[in-house]
Length: 397
Length: 182
Image 1 (cartoon, rainbow over the protein chains, first blue to last red):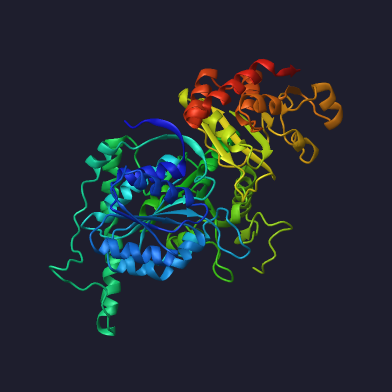
Image 2 (cartoon, one colour; image 1 turned 180 degrees about the vertical axis):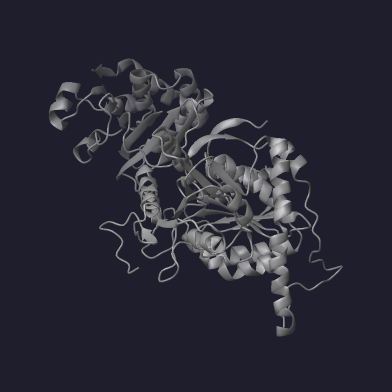
C-alpha cells in the first residue's frame, strides 16, 4: 500500500510518471498542466528519476521529440492542455500511425478565443480522430492510477499505441485531496521494463514513417482502425490486473445507481462526482435517476454502454464542447449514432454545459433531468441546447 | 461536510492556508479538498481559496458558494468584498483586524459569530513579515475545532521547514489571543 496523503493532483500525476520509471519527458508548460511538468523536472533535477528531460520551444516540438524518443525505444511521457494540444495536432497522427506508445496527460481546458484558461472539453473533443487510446479520470487518484495503466496498455505488444489520460483543468489539476501514492516497487511489479517491438538503432537500421502511396495508404488506415479496436481486450485485462494488485478496479463504462433508473444522466470527467452527489439527492427525493460515464473514450466501448443504459426510458447527456453549425455535442452525437438502429429508440436530450470554466452544479443537472422528463411527457424540447447561456439558447434549431 | 472560504490578497498565502487545513484533516484519516479560485492571480489583488472537510469521500467539484466558515486574511478586504456572501447563519467569520467585533459589525454589517484577531501584529512580531496565513489558521481552529491542532502544526512544520518556528509561534498566539464574539 502506498502512503495516503493530501497532495495536489498534478503533483500526484508527476509522481506516478516517475514511479513508471519513464526514460524521457519532452514537454512545454501550459496552464493548467504546468505543475505536472514543473514537478517532473524537479524530480529529474534532484536525481530521483534517471530520465532525460527535454525542455522544448513549443508543444509541436514536444510531441515531435516524444515521437523521436519513443521510436528510439524510450518509455516516453508528456503533458499538455488546450492550445498546446491543438498545436500538437498534426504530430498526434504520426505518433499513433508509427505505433509509438507515448503516454500524455491532458489537463483539459477551453480553446481561445476569447482567451480562457479554464476547464472544458473542447481540446480533447477536437482530437477524437487522431488514433490514440483516450481515457478519462474523475478524481486525482484515478488520474495517477491511469498514468500507470496507460503505459502498460500502450506498451502491450498487442496494442502499441499512444495513450492520452484526460483530467479536468483546475477542478482536478489544482485540487489538494487525499491520494494513495503509488509505491515505486509495486508499480515496477505491475509495469515491467519497456521492451520495444522495434526501434531506431544504427546497428540494425529500419525506416519508420516513409511515404505511403495511394496503393498502401488505405491499408495502413485499415491497420490503424484494426489496431485500436483490438486494444479493447488488453485494456480490460490491464484494468483487471491493476484492480487485483492495487484494489482499485476501473471499467470502460462506469455506472452509478442505474438499477431501475428511468432517466440516466451521461457525463465524462471531473463533473461526474458532482453528478453522483446529485443522483443521491434526487434518489432521496424519490426520483429514479442514475448516472453513466464513459471512462474509455477511444476505443469507444459502445457495447458496454448499451448494457449500462439497459432499462432507461431517456438519456440526458451533458457535453462540455459542441460543433458550431454541426450536430451538437460530441458525446451525444456518438451515442445517437450508435443507438439509431436500436429498438425501442429512447429519447436523448443534449445539454452543453461547463464551457470555459463555468461551474456545473445541481441546477444544471436538474435542468437536464427536466428536459428529459418533458420529452417523456410528449413535450417538444430543443434537441440540443447550451443550458447555461444567459437569456436562453438563441441558435436556430 | 464543512465548507470554508478564504479571502485574502495575492501573495498573502490564502491558498496555502486552505491547503494546510485540508492536509491536517487528511492526516487525521478524514477527507478534504483545498483549491484556489482558478484564475490568473496578481500579487495584491483580492483572491479567494476554498476548502472542504468531511468524514466521508467528498464528491463535489464546484466552487464553495455557501460556506460554513469564512476567513479574512487582510483587514482591507472588508471594504471591497462582501465576505459574508452565502455564509450560513450558523457560520463563523474569522477576521484579521485591529478593531474589535462591535466596531467591525457596525462598520461592515457583519452578522453571526465573529472572531477577531490582530494577525498583522502577531505575524510582524513572530515571522517578521505581514504574511497572515498561518496566524489566521490559529484563530480559525480555536473558534471551530475543525482539525487537530497538533496535526495542523505538523503540516506547518512540513511546509515551512527551517522557517516554520515563527509560523508555529504566530499560529499558537492567534489561537490564544483571538476574541470570539457570539
